[in-house]
Amino acid sequence: MEKVDIPKKAIYRLSIYHRCLQRLHDNGQETVSSTALAKAAGVKPAQLRKDLAYFGQFGTRGLGYPVDTLASMIRDVLGRERLQPVVLVGAGNLGSALLHYQGFQKEGFEVVCAFDADPEAAVRRGVAIPVKSDKEIDTFVKDEGVKLAILCVPAGFAQAVANRLVAAGIQGILNFSPVVLEVPEEVVVNNVDLALELEHLSFFVR
Amino acid sequence: MEKVDIPKKAIYRLSIYHRCLQRLHDNGQETVSSTALAKAAGVKPAQLRKDLAYFGQFGTRGLGYPVDTLASMIRDVLGRERLQPVVLVGAGNLGSALLHYQGFQKEGFEVVCAFDADPEAAVRRGVAIPVKSDKEIDTFVKDEGVKLAILCVPAGFAQAVANRLVAAGIQGILNFSPVVLEVPEEVVVNNVDLALELEHLSFFVR
DNA sequence: TATTGTGAAGAAGTTCACAGCG
DNA sequence: CGCTGTGAACTTCTTCACAATA
Figure 1 (tube, rainbow over the protein chains, first blue to last red):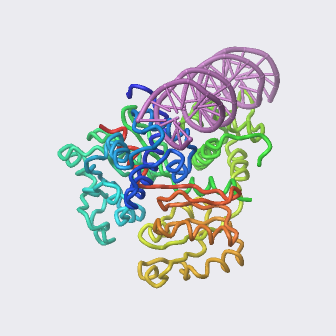
Figure 2: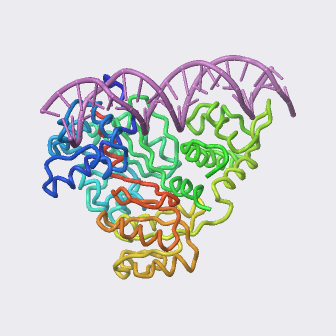
Figure 3: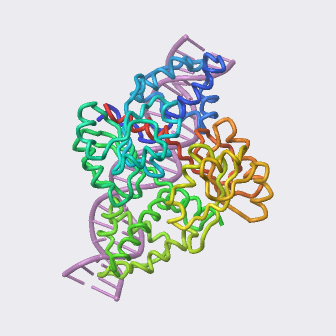
C-alpha cells in the first residue's frame, strides 16, 4: 500500500513521539535530539531515527530535530491534520463510558454519532451526543462519509455489526468486543481487548 | 525468567485460544484440530501448534487436542486457575466506566477496591465497589497482597501513582494513562492507549 | 490416514556502528 | 564536534515442510 514497507509498530511509535513533541512544544523547546526524544518515548535512539527516516529527512546533523516541524509532519503522516469523524456502535456500559472519555476529542477525533439497539436506554445512561437506532447505521455512515468506527457491542453481535459497518463504507474499526472479526483485507481492525490485557499481565505476575 | 524463551505475543494468543476453547466447550465439542482452532483464533495452524509446544505436548496425532485439558493447561500457564484480585486507581470517567464493565469479572478477575483522590465523587458516579482515598493505596495493597493494578489517573499523576503502587508491592500495571511509565524491570506494564489506537487506524484510512 | 511436533528456512523488526554533514 | 541517516549485523518471530505417530 505504501512505497517502502514500514513496520506496523513504527506507526504506533509515531503517535507516541507526537505526544512527546507536544509536551516539548508546550515547554517552548524548539529542537530535540534523537537521544532525548527517544528517552521520553521509551525507545532506543537508533529506532527513533529509523522510524522518522521512513518518511523523509527532518533532522539537522549536529543539532537535532525541529520540534514543531516534526510534530506537523507526524500529524500529516497519521492523517490527523484535519478532524476525523468517528461513529460509535454499542452504547452499553463500555460504549457509553468511552463517550464520556475525553481522550479522543483531545487527540482530534470527533465522535459524531452513537448507535445502539436501544437508543433511549443509552440516552438515559447520560450519553451527550446523538444516539440513533442501529438500523440507521448504513444511511448515516454513507451520507456523512464516516471512515472510522468504534465497536463496543456484545461479542455475539460484533461480527454482524462489523459486516454492516463495512458495507456502509467504514474502513477502520476499533474493536472492543472480545471476538476475532473477519473483514475484507482493505479494512483495518484494531482490537482492544481489556480482559486479555489483564490476562497477559497475570502471566508475568507470580 | 522462563526456561525457554517464549515470544511475548504467544502469551496474548494463548488467551485468545482459551476463549475459543471455552466456546467449543460450551458447544460440547471434546477435541479440536490445530487447523480448526487456529482458524477460530485468526492465526495459522503452524503457529498455534508452535505456541502450544512451548508448554508441552497436549495433542494426539491424527486426532487433535482435547478441548478441556487444553483450556485448563492454558489457565494454568496464565496463572488463572484461581481468582486474581485487582485494584483500580483513578475512578474518573474512564475508571468508573471500567468498573461497570463486566468483562474483567467474566474472565476471572475481581476488582476488589478502587482508589481516587475524591472517593465521594466516584461513589456519586455510581461505582459499586468500595472506593477509598488514594492515600490508603499503600496499606491496602500490602495487607491484601494484591499484585495487579489498573491505572486510570490523568496523565500528570500517572508516574507518581505508579511509583506508589510499585512501592506497595504491585507487580503488574494495566496502564490507561497516555504516558510512558518508568518502573523497575521486575514490574510489568501493559499500556492501553485508546487515543493512540484511533490514531493508528487513522493512518490506514485515506 | 489424519494430524501433531519440530528443525530449518524465511520474514520482519531492532540495534549497532560509523560515514556524512551541518 | 555532535548528531543524523543508514547499510549491515543481529535478534526475534513466523511459516514451511515433513518425519513421527496414534
